[in-house]
Image (cartoon, rainbow, N blue to C red; front, side, top):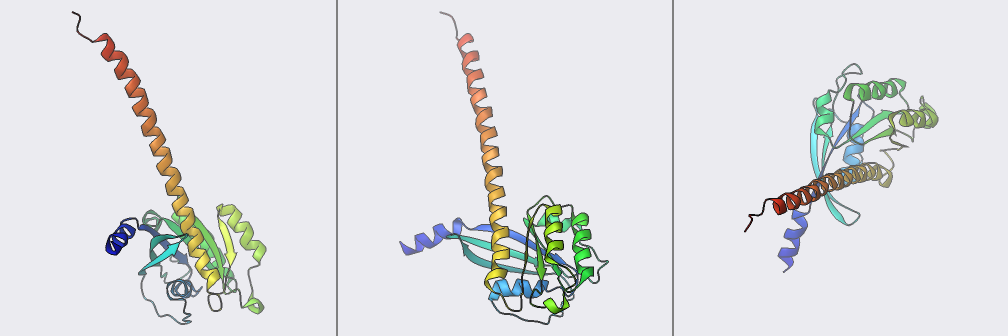
Length: 209
């Protein structure tokens, strides 16, 4: 009986793909690993994009995250539209201590032209003495992107970083539910119309005795 329960739980597992996008050295990997392991690792030497899979319980339901940690070589190395096509949600990250990284996410969003949920994240919020981008600028850009926004510190925060990914996941799942209901409504509407039409036609097509 217990094994059946586990199998049912696995079969209902939702998969959500999230791409973490931002300029070099803004803390994309630190954010990702903080979410995956709750640990903070400050230095990374990635030479290419990395993918991770991580299962969590979100609002009581099992979710399998697949996270793409992108690795641009420079601030001129913009992400391709393929990333937006792969992802169910985008996490656009800049450092509050780096004005160029803030400009990068603006250009990255234009490059991606996403039609998926996204969130804007200002990382390194613990380094306020080096701040180059104000919270108000982040809020304004998020309004321009029509997305959520928050500042976090991957070096110090666990819950807040997890909430970034969890809230984005909720948006993805909500969008899926709306799309599913919309499709169901269209299908039911078509079937209802078909039944009415078929019934009317079949009456007139009955053989006469």
